[in-house]
Length: 330
Ligand SMILES: C[S@@+](CC[C@H](N)C(=O)[O-])C[C@H]1O[C@@H](n2cnc3c(N)ncnc32)[C@H](O)[C@@H]1O
Image (cartoon, protein in one colour):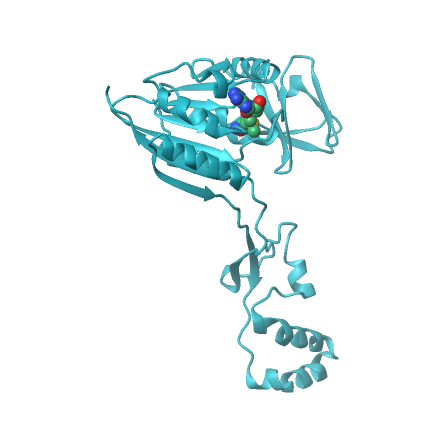
């Protein structure tokens, strides 16, 4: 890491921030005080102790994913689940030419730039003067000016000012239907152009689809990205209850031998093991670290990694409408 570099100060997945290293600078946060001079010269990914030595932070190289997690929000932004789907369905890859509006906070712009670099170009349009200016500053700092061409413009009123240029168009606008006809003009001739529009409300989707049809787009489809988390745990394998343990015979015998110590455990096993749920006993808790992973020295064959889909689905962000069109040579 060098003087003037942008780095991500990563404490944990929920606590990271972006900083610019400056000789003589200091990062102060709840983990302690971190002199930039200690960080400068170390490789990206280094885990560095605070001045007092009681806190640690990792300093990571910025990536579009980390930028999306730390960027200053000027608007609502696109997050990775949507970004992944849109990038795939718009067939983004190195060399592609993409038109985007609005730029907003530039979350998606950074991912597009990485995907199409070094030979592709992203033309991104934003009508809010301050946001457009801030984004121009950011891409200069992030050395992305060779891939991104930002423009301050109202695309619903003035169009994109591009013809025979784009492979793909991405719209994240309050009234995307007003930009559809202008978007069509930007596509390369003699090729199939792909468009995606991102809208939070179904009424916006309906109006956009009507306009897409009117303009001759085909293969109009809508998707919604929802995250389903998996709860992954390590459990201790246990044998299937025998007739004796099920009837309590073992309990009685064990109670005699160990003065009642094992009785509690036997009851727990028969209570909990029947429905495959996690075991809530002291032995098990002691074997798990903070992340729920087993950390004792037991034989690996005694452990079982299980996962379960968490029923609650994270909230809706937006609907994604995709469409494509073949543009004639004439
Ligand atoms: C939700 S934000 C886009 C967020 C962006 N996709 C991101 O990931 O950071 C929508 C942006 O569109 C801009 N916008 C709205 N109408 C526009 C128009 N007619 N022309 C250009 N930009 C427009 C707004 O100013 C706003 O910054």
